[in-house]
Image (cartoon, rainbow, N blue to C red):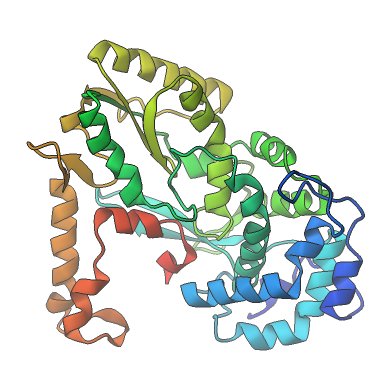
Length: 375
């Protein structure tokens, strides 16, 4: 079965070098560079640049992760790539490459529910990572300073700092707005329109659209289409999520609000309960109207800042950051898990290393949605 899905959908082309494949890229240039000036190479050529691909493979290899629906492991990929990459690169360059569906797995959540993840094949993880490395710098400079998820030099720890800062500034009330199944409900057309604002390379846009539409394979082997959504689990999904939610950041910035967003988790702080109610109503209208997302009204609320929780943290009686009770219980359970198993920590680590394996709530948030979470 190995190689089954990595091969299917790739139109047969004559084998050639990767450089030959890149030279057959389309003629349009993308808005790259510091001032958006056209570059000599097309974006698809930059994606297929050997150095960019080498860096992408290095990242995917370091993240490890489980096989996709073709069963191919990280260790098996180099031999596959040596044999098939020239033809695959040509297909990407010519716009005929078809990604494999992602493998659906379910990750337990603390509340007893499950979070769906989609594991791409190793090949598609490498290609997605290569795309993300080229697209990221184009969008990074325009992102809000209040967006902290999956961005260089930012982290969940910096996001939760807004709670202490807000208290010192007299912002003692907050809005918690929960987006229901965000990653499963992103509107593809709106996302592609946002990408077109900075990407002019039709081959690159087509490749991203095909990743969005690749579908999922369920545990019983059946396949489902993905007419909307950005599957969690691939290297490209965090960037696409930030692009999809950038209009929300810009709206909150334009209104002068103090806020922090980490992926689809965000908190807005204000100075009065009445202002909090107004902001929540405006957020619901914007998210459901402009962004066509679904707000979970049962979980969206206004409350005193000290009663709010964000990324596993709250403010204690001294208005300092502290873990929530739930996050503290989870930490203790994860420390005890290796002891209960009797076999020591997974992965063959020495028993004394288990504490280093258990991350704080914010550190856990920093690794969410990455392929390595499925390993």
